[in-house]
Image 1 (cartoon, rainbow, N blue to C red):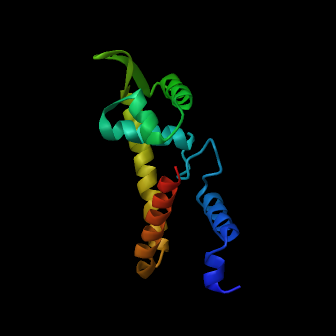
Image 2 (tube, rainbow, N blue to C red):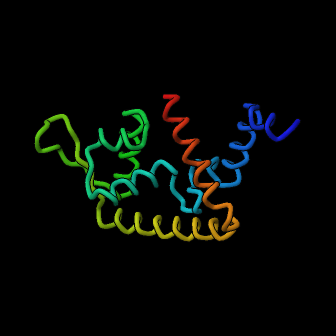
Length: 149
């Protein structure tokens, strides 16, 4: 099969993505790809909250692209770890505002540092002339997935 024919085969895309998921460590539900002992969803939630300072839970749900019930459980886990505090939204009796605690900010900083280190090593291992192409391919995949929704 030629390279162009392989590029049009959905099974080839599936295998390539599966290989990436395994190699990057995304198949390990209780550990981030950077080796931190929390789930990828928890890490993403901490990152969003660290970036914004505070978010309504409904906004976190939108950003994470998860179901409301999943984010509710996720916030419960983060709260149980002492990393997130919940407060009623000042302008909406049913809304919930989420903020990182001091411990949560430390955890988010540790995660961010582990991410920087992992991605720095990964980037260093990609030949310089291939990096723009890798980033472009990832952008194309995200756009295709967004259109599919």
